[in-house]
Amino acid sequence: MFKRLPDSTIFNLQAGDETAFNEVYHHYRDLLYVIVFSITKHPQTSEDLLQDTFIKVFTEAKSLRNPSAFHGWIIRIARNGAINRLKQPPETTLDPEAWDQIGKSDVPTNFISLWQSCLSEKENLVIAYRLVYELTFKEIAALLQEPLTSVHRDYREALKTLKAWYNQSGGQ
Image 1 (cartoon, rainbow, N blue to C red):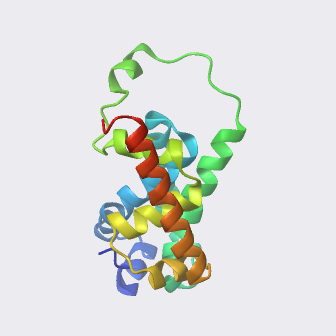
Image 2 (spheres, helix red, strand yellow; image 1 turned 60 degrees about the vertical axis):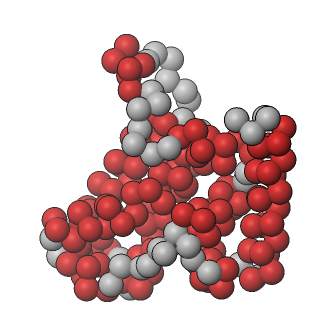
């Protein structure tokens, strides 16, 4: 189950503690990757944005006034970074060494690719929170600041979409 980090960890991060930063990184890495990948739809770009997100978190943690708001704050940084990257013109060249890295992420991109290709950003979040982090629907509604009924509806619709895709693809 996905649990928020204790405020003491956030205070330590704000003080520049590298151990606290490592704890934050390991706690949020997978969730932020799912969020960023659902927006960019590109593994290498998502990895780059994830790195940028954590650099920004480390350098700007002191600006966070309320440690209880950390969860939403770090998600906004990742999401806004991904959205801003989409607004930039695409790069015209790709370093030849980068071709070797595509698809070698330690995150299971096949399943994530399914999520991002079939589901909206909000549905991606609901599925990730529910299935990966085992949050309750009530916890998800609070995190997304959405009515509980909307979260239930989004979850059901996302599962129907994934099931239809799975059946259409022949279960592969």
